[in-house]
Length: 128
Image (cartoon, rainbow, N blue to C red; front, side, top):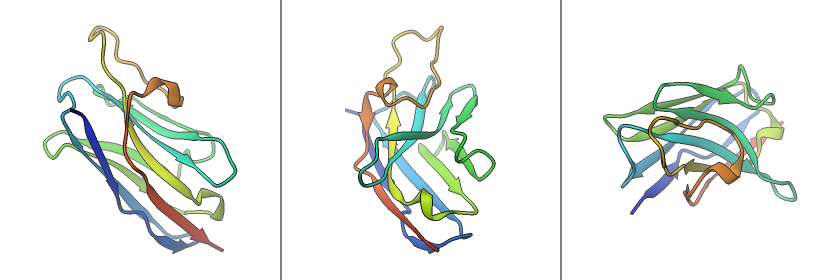
């Protein structure tokens, strides 16, 4: 059974940094497609960063250049380094993973529908 547990959310001032972690269990070690998505109150869910086992990454326009997604395969942790945080980054952040059906094609994308497994979320609040 796949289990994703996020941590690292906090309240910070604008311009600050945070690193979110997602501890992964029960998921494939070799082929993977994972992402970070967020949802602010009253807004729809937004994908912010994605990564696959080839280390291909994708970022939303709103975070590109400020956020970095990475994966530690040995520790089985997915990270999201967030720098130069802005008040509009305030949201619940979710770690997500896609079930791999075909190892000859490993997907990569920010859309929520790509993901089959979700964590409970960690709250990030950025004050101005």
